[in-house]
Amino acid sequence: MKKKRPVGALITTLIMIFFYVPIVFMIIFSFNSSKSLTNFTGFSLKWYEQMFASHDMMNSLYVTIVVAVLATVISTIIGTITAIGLRYSKKLVRAYVTQINDLPMMNPDIVTAIGLMLLFITFRIERGFATLLLAHIAFCIPYVMLSVIPKLRQLDPNLADAAMDLGATPFQTLTKVIVPEIMPGIVSGALIAFTMSFDDFIISYFATGQGVKNLSIMVYTMAKRVNPSINAISTLLVLLITIILLVVNIWPVIREKIEKKRQADPNYLPSPHKHTARNWSIFAAAAVAVSCILFFRPAAGTQEFAGQTLHLYLPGEYISDEMLAEFENKTGSKVVVDNFDSNEQMYIKIANGDSFDVLIPSDYMIQRLIGEDLLMKLDPEKVDEALVQIDDQILDLPYDPQNQYSVPYFWGTVGIVYDKNKVDLADLEKDGWGIFADEKYKGDIYLYDSERDQFMAALKNLGYSMNTSDPKELAAAYDWLVNIVQTMEPEIVTDEIIDNMANGRKALGMIYSGDATYVMQENENMGYYLPKEGTNVWVDAMCIPKNAQNVDLAYAFINYVAGYEAQMMNSTYVGYTAANKEVEDELASTDFEGINSYVPRTGYDLDETFEYNPDSRKTIADYWSRVKVVASNSR
Image (cartoon, rainbow, N blue to C red; front, side, top):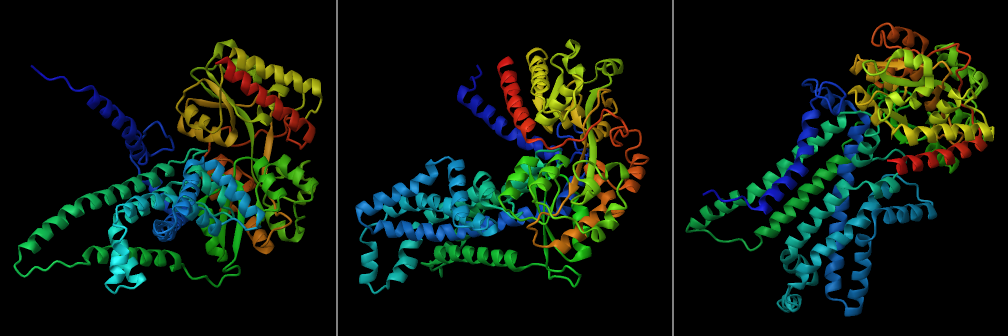
């Protein structure tokens, strides 16, 4: 009679599957030939090639390793010395310091992160690599002490006195008696510190600045758009960790066998300091590795801007790494890229005085920055080379007349992506934006989590301008959206719509034209429609803030990015419409031939560009928050 498998074993198996299947899934899709994160289309190594070619990704990996190693070494030394000092301190002091030490571990990370950020701001410490390292050291020390203190409690309290009675100096007692005895606790604390530092996101996000990013921040930025290079770098990390674990587990077995052979030798004499020597050799090797990482940097070239750094601030996943590398090679400069999640987040940093050399915001936000005197007026002679190559249809627009402050970067529209097998084109032509209220598609639509664009669709469907500030018209648009979320069971998403529609998960949704271009490339059954009521024709453009540190380098960057070579690399990689007219026409007839989303609709009277209106912006933001609450309650 067969024995029944214990329930505990079954639960354990299910837990293991739950933990490891996503990792296996990630590894498989790191070799996917397409950008899809859910549909495997064929084997390819291109995402690994792109990962190694990525300036930003490799730099974030470098920062992650350096910070993790330095934070581990420094926090281990400080934590160990502090723990030993506490062991020989008064009981009251021990209790007080222990409570303080436990506080950072008990606090939510977000509290610690904001506290450190406010500390740096209060003392006017510019956030960057130094503040990131200090933050990591601060939260790693408690974990080291937590590992070392129990080992110290196991020591004979008279051990140090006995060693000094036998002639050892205090330093010799520390290094040759106490430290070897508590070494397992030190190593355990160091490993925990390294893991915490390598893995941290929240504290790092608030403690860093000036384009300094660790891997967790980079992955967070990349995850907002479809980028399988995330899978590639994560797979390499899993492989590295697996190798380390194998070495750690296999090496003791090998060492034990070697030790038995030595002991079998009649001339064998044990070395009293072999463990100490081995541990110190490990720390020495780590120090050498860190030194190599820190100081092995390519020498600056002899180009015009050699040794200078351009600080660039733009939306995430919005620029070609190949193009950045070419610019660095041509100028000898280094480009530090910082990303923002929204134009509003970017505005807060600029308004608070954060310094960047080039910004790439959207049209309405450029208008706001101009109105608040936060942008530098461009020297016409220094941008003539750039402007002459730009499509005339996106020059001299109301947000920046005569392009005195900005040079277009990308442009496009907002429209409807739809599955041709599920949605009748006649319905789109009849309803326009109103198709989102068509009962035929109930539960099969995506709304986009953008207050501006969703209210644009509502206002256009009601026959109003998307730049209206009339309270009655805005209230009517609010009612229109509330009706949809109450009756149509929509899913409100952001960039996940890209992969979802590429895989045909719903019938239709609101989307940006560049994202629709990718969707249509991946799935021939997808179409893109611009409603007859009109839409938003948007422009993102390059600007130089007033507090820019490297103005000449900023001009060089703007002129290079507006040129044919850079725009070709950029538009091909990102998928949005090139501002360079020659590149736009060429790609429309080659790479993106037959994809109507790549070439924006022009000359249509009902299409508009957003204008900055603080009163309507606040009203729309409040209304959209209410719409999402209604949507949550309607599920």
